[in-house]
Length: 81
Figure 1 (tube, rainbow, N blue to C red):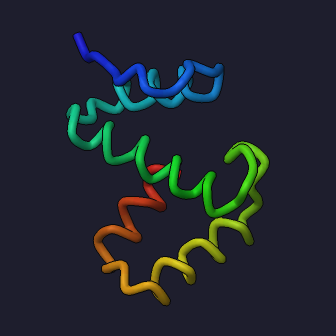
Figure 2: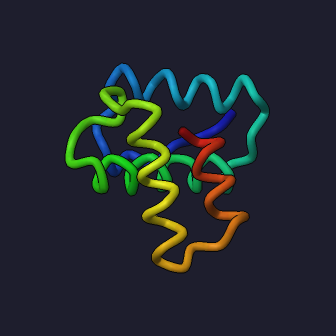
């Protein structure tokens, strides 16, 4: 059984993300990383991540690159999103 952090409220989107990660067989550390990636993306957007467009994701990738984030982390972020 996988346990999740209770730092954030469990919204329907977060619940779905958690279910999808379990279904994909992701380990607990990867799940934590993915949740953190989505939180950072939402902070960058200034709104809920489900409202994001493909262009928003691309802008976030550019933002990460411009701020020295490495390719592995950018790729992990894209997988999380």
